[in-house]
Image 1 (cartoon, rainbow, N blue to C red):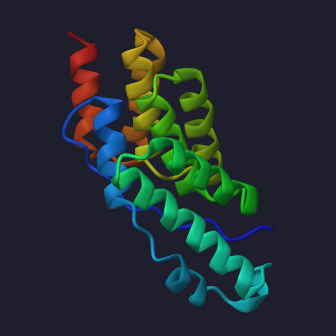
Image 2 (image 1 turned 90 degrees about the vertical axis):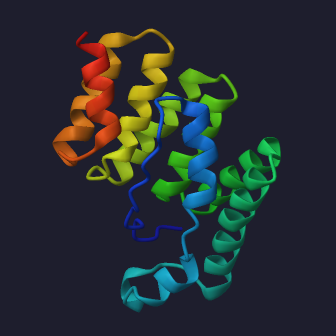
Length: 168
């Protein structure tokens, strides 16, 4: 199943903490997948309406579980979303942030890199990766990822703040 990648919304977290990002993200990144797919020309979507509904249901379930603090269930729903559509950048992003929140930094970085591969123009993806590297004490990797976020969005305040903090 391959679907056109979702246009990303910008998420602006207030601190440089991955846990804060996950909690903010999983409440804010409520994408209307059904509405999104309705806008895609039929020849660009290789999925049945049932498959799209199942994908939408899995993604929405992940958001609901995360909002209720049920992170294990949220992870299962995100993985189901990705099983159905491995090109769903927002699911990779959410999974990466969830892994960061549950102290699985290598998995978090990997998932965030996948999100970047799927949607290379979304500044929040390298910024989120920067926060994971920063938490691990990987200063050079964190600053490089923050610089990438600023290349994509020169007005990204959190990436700028991380760079300023790293250059002190």
